[in-house]
Amino acid sequence: MTYHKKMYIAGELVGGAAEITVENPATEQVVGHVAAAGLPEAQRALDAAAAAFPYWSRASIKERQDWMFKLRDAVIANETYLRDCLHHEMGKPWSSTQEDFDSLKNALAFYAEEIARVHDTSIADRAGTHTHRLVHEPAGVALAFLAWNFPLLNLAFKIGPAMAAGCPIIIRPSEMTPISAYAVGELCHQIGLPAGVVQILCTDGYDVADALTASTIPAMITLIGSAKTARHIMATGATSIKRYSMELGGNAPVLVFSDADLDLAADIVCNVKFSNAGQICVSPNRVFVASDVYDAFRDKVVARAKSAKVGFDKTADIVTGPLIDKRAWTRIKGLIDSAARDGAKVLAGGDRPKGCDTGHFIAPTVLGDVTPEMDVYTHETFGPIVSLVRFDSEADLVARANDGDDGGLTAYIFTADLHKAEKYAAALRYGEIQINGVKYDIDLPHGGIGQSGIGHDCSYLALNDYLVTKRITRALS
Image 1 (cartoon, rainbow, N blue to C red):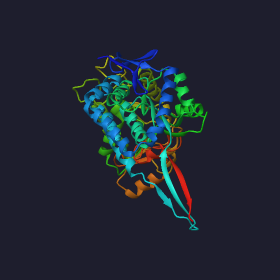
Image 2: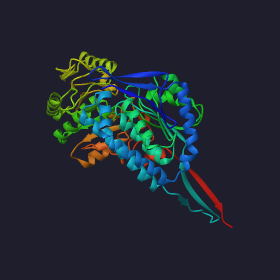
Image 3: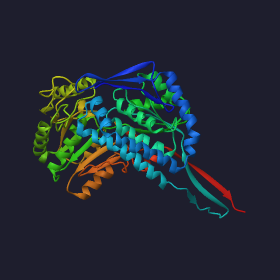
Image 4: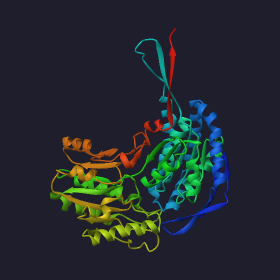
């Protein structure tokens, strides 16, 4: 199957002067050609968004809700097609495409309902001489840069609150996985969404992306990506004062204490680490295990790694798909080999899995006796590697878990001692603390601390990034 896709700009499906070729990383075969935006198309999108703002920002909540539900219904009607796009553009196992799809469907419905809960509030005047009303209004045109790892989920986290808040949004999907995003543009065109409210275009290089960022038209820029990219965007966007909402990943620690349910901990660590080939921003990276249960926990993780099915087969129960490209494969293999040279034990995986002669596959890997000097310890791996780290004393455990330059998005704690769990949850500098389980949903805030970003995806908090507060004060006669 080969997809041919156009951009969605100013309410129309349009071609470009260039095309981006998309390969399925599981087969290394071309699966799509999508139109790429040049500077003229980027400027047209900016102008269309600016022109749409007066209408969309003043549209009633009911009108915005109606359009969001129309798009949601179109998404539902095209479920198989959208999931096929995901399946082929990144080699994502078929079962995993459900999460992406559901996220888009659910985000449109959730924010259409959530925006109705945003109301004016008042502040009592201490002197009794004035009334004060706080009004929440759309921030302006939004510009979204998406990561490639969850093409529809990442799009969902942006399009939902932007549409609900009344902000026209320009969405720039990753050039590695633009097909499903462009398919959403087709659905926007199909339902007749007013021009400029949503626009979807891809760029193949920094010049056009930088032109979008440097424009004074966007009032806010949102990103799912790396801290390096975030710093570049913020520097380039300094042509005007803008708002930012950025989710930037992190070097997630896992604390497995002696009294933990080891099977539960092993299940969660392996499920989050091996699904999507570990290319998940909340994926566990450093697994600190109490020495007295280290061997037992290690064996459980190794068994799960060896049984995880790898490949690209729509009819099979695949757990681990491919890494996104050859560069990612080379980087992950390099991390494994470097750790082994520095003394880590390769307990499972470590190379291309048997039976996967083509594609960018790495077998689910477990590294034992990982130490802080190793590259696999110090940086977010973004691959299917579980790094096991022993600890004998809890004295410096918080400092070790908090140490790192990759910021604080997610941390995991496994213990039967509720007091201990809460003590460590309070001490860990991460935006999300998962205790004896893991839960993500559209109504739960998702955001990091420090170098892991600013603002939130999901929940009512995401609306705050797209809304500004105005104070209206009236003197009493």
